[in-house]
Length: 157
Image (cartoon, rainbow, N blue to C red):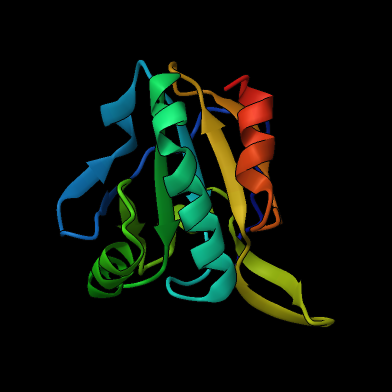
């Protein structure tokens, strides 16, 4: 089960409804009229994913002030996301995609290089969905460190 999809700027963002860390369903369509950063990460409570999530957390007020919502998605179960949220003080929705349908729809799951080996897993990816539901950015294989600063620069935030 891997993604052959590679989304591009101008594509319509695939809609999704996923449970958040507290079990409440969150749908992309609920944010129409706002820009949304949808980022996919491999696993809660791992060093790179923690760095990235805390970076989003630390920049959330500026992003929110500029009308940008942040949604983090991983294949982790809801209970693990709740623990991650509480442990790191994360204040944006973390969504659980255990069946990987949303990951696949965005091309964020498939073959990747890890320490020189080809493995199948989550490709750290970030998308900026415009207020109209169309992709303004589609970035694959992003780095956990420095990524949010680059996004802010790209978004003019």
